[in-house]
Image (tube, rainbow, N blue to C red):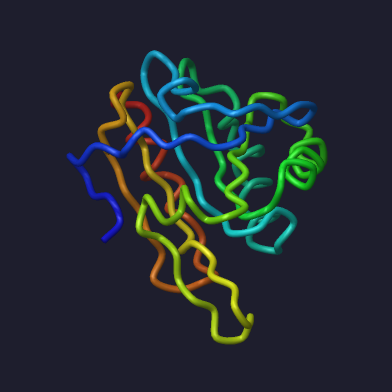
Length: 159
């Protein structure tokens, strides 16, 4: 079962992309002093990812003070960095979850019947405190619904 409010997310490690470079990092390495937001959108450049992340840009999510916005995607670091350059928001970073280890640790992986042998994470967002405790959790029950942006922003304001 995916993490819920009050639970602590394990300190996963994956390749972190910033639009130019990539390096291995743990979640606790990249959380801000107030915490962070972890958003899973499946694959970079998917219609869902493009829609959601452009909405985050327009909403000013890159301006949260000491609360980084961290994507998780099944793409490799080169695709992740290209996506981040496309967004043109240097404050956003993405974990490259090529083998699904991060998504599996969050219990988000689901087999996709129309994508032979491929599993993708459910679209989700977790607002975390600096100790990785979940203060807000959203996991979509379908593949296309938008994130409850206003609820996430309210949770960030309370960090």
